[in-house]
Image (cartoon, rainbow, N blue to C red; front, side, top):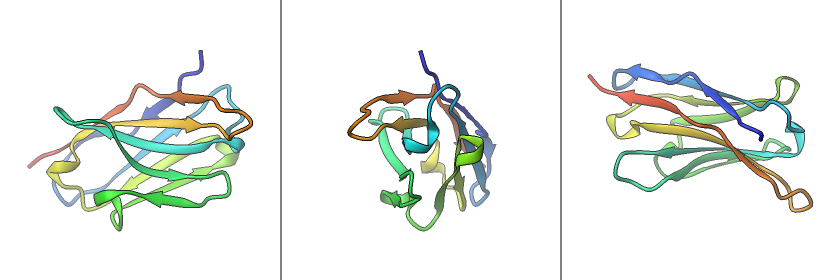
Length: 118
């Protein structure tokens, strides 16, 4: 079973930055749209950002203007650079790899915890 691996979470103060990484062993990274979700206590999982194989990006909600998603195809890794973090960004951040229509597989990581607190 394919399992993505997230890293880079931690405890930070409001206004600080973090960069999350998602490595993708055993998949053909170049064909997948990479996505970052988050799940906060008591809330549903929500899409934060996504990047297509051609590097088109999409952001939702409060991620716009503060978060940047990127990918390094040579390293089969996706990144989520988060700036000006707020307490409401506290959540478990999960990475997903979403395959194209002709290869409709979806893989998830187990998540990395981000806590924003003073």
